[in-house]
Image 1 (cartoon, rainbow over the protein chains, first blue to last red):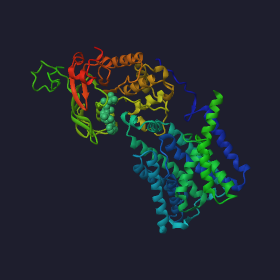
Image 2: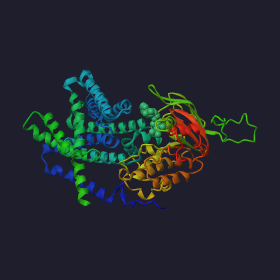
Image 3: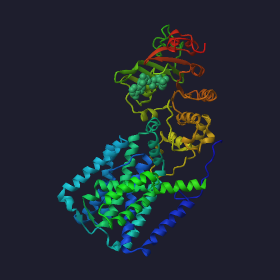
Image 4: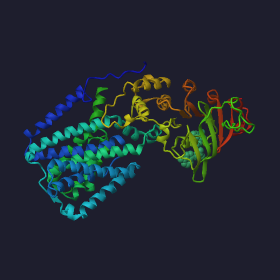
Length: 321
Length: 274
Ligand SMILES: Nc1ncnc2c1ncn2[C@@H]1O[C@H](COP(=O)(O)OP(=O)(O)OP(=O)(O)O)[C@@H](O)[C@H]1O
Ligand SMILES: [Mg+2]
């Protein structure tokens, strides 16, 4: 056979030995963080992990299927709403509420997906934005259920996870599992079809792929992961209000994904860390966080459009060559 | 195949032929009065055409004759405005392209249409899995399995680019990209292969390689080849359809087509390469 055979190094759960080792080191280092950080900073680190999951779920579509969603904040927030509602008004145990939240987010994502998958480019952006606005409008107006503008408060977090460190470790464990699942997802045979759609829809169709169906599945899976982030956020915050499902939430998720690097997947956590750190530094000096965020975004687009991780990766490979 | 004086091919039905004397293979593709209109422009303007199973057919004609649009109607990218298309016993007139692919229609594109950021290998994997349920494996292993690997190797070998399997497509030369165009359409062993100017833009030596690739295709595959260079097309096919302004001008065996007055007229009014 003339085909060059790609050597298959020994693998752990589909990762090369080296990648598995690096992943393990990062998780262990992250697990040690609470020993070095203040209680407040542990809270920030938890937030980074939660929003990293959200940004990563956006990257599944943006980086791999070439579809940037401005509706993922709403999908995330639906999960948060359902978890808070189910524990406070429904009296459900946290684990069941968590599952209900993720399920609700997945259903909302499936509906978004049905409507959006036949579009691409700026139409996809605008359609997902509009769908997100509808969810926001419902959360704002359906006062009896959502608490309207005041939102809802509730003790969502299970008792064993009450301390900041304990909750951080639980979120870290979830983030590790979820990030691994998303990594497997984009590398799977199905994930390859999303990259094919990003590169050429017409070729995919002529090869026998039902392109809208693949995008629908991709959108729904991505929404499931955004829902996991939203449910964790409910337990983190013990509070939900329309700002959780607002456009700003979607935009922030997209900016974190871009700051980390579109298509880098794990860059989402770096982007989330960068933006949350910046937000904390900036808000000590000014109220105009949104403006600073906008300027930061412009600077990233000019100087590092490939994102932080993308830039690092490019620099490293250049050195190696 | 017998041609009547006006160039219409003989009906392939056996009803009016004494049984056992003439055997004409049943057509795999039949277009009946197919029209594709873009607003006022009828790019395909009432084409009726029938291709017997296993035949190699060329579609020639000057620029803008409607050849690519005809392919798009057959493959489903641009469904016909009116008319009917039958393929292998199915009415495919209204089917979306992916359903036609599943019935065994495969095509290449006149303007190279690959997955530029993926490796040659991944391009081939996508081409092969278009017809297999494995494309829906959400968390499965990405690598090609023991059934896929030899099929991909065979198609890359047939298209003469086996040694480029690990290269990213956008780094291939233009000629190699045209070879990959063919390899992608071959790997599923289609029933019918539609080749839209596979040699467009290639050097003479590359063109003869493409001709060689087409010549060595499995004889069971029905091949329809668009090509306006008669030198290339006529050596490869059993029968020729010449289109002009959306209509079929002439259908004839390759030996006669060069001397056909109508064909000479549309090709700049003089015999080419006389
Ligand atoms: N999507 C479209 N919208 C509008 N007009 C189109 C479209 N596609 C093709 N046409 C027009 O239809 C006519 C036939 O085009 P087509 O591409 O089928 O010709 P062709 O025979 O393949 O020509 P060539 O040899 O140059 O490839 C042309 O006049 C072209 O401009
Ligand atoms: Mg053409």
